[in-house]
Image 1: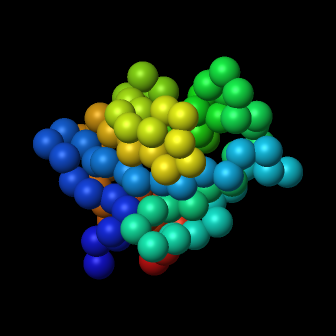
Image 2: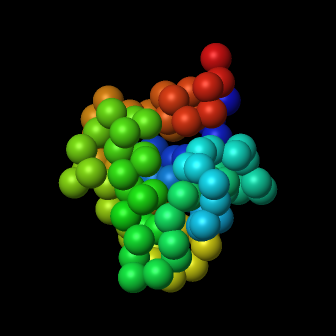
Length: 101
């Protein structure tokens, strides 16, 4: 089943995330409505949370940071990101981030 927070794009996927900055550790919490909720161990100042989010997703999905673009929500809790990678599908992203079978 395709997750509501992740959709396919030509050559990649789009993620809808909701972040919570200033957490004790960076981790995926789960799905909240139509967004993936992620706690970040970073301050929400001067783009630090955005950098931490991109670094976390790049590591979790085994893609270079340069393949991830924050397209909407630079200063909001809710963000849209586009990942350029032909090997990622909404299903594979859900499996990697949520540990779904």
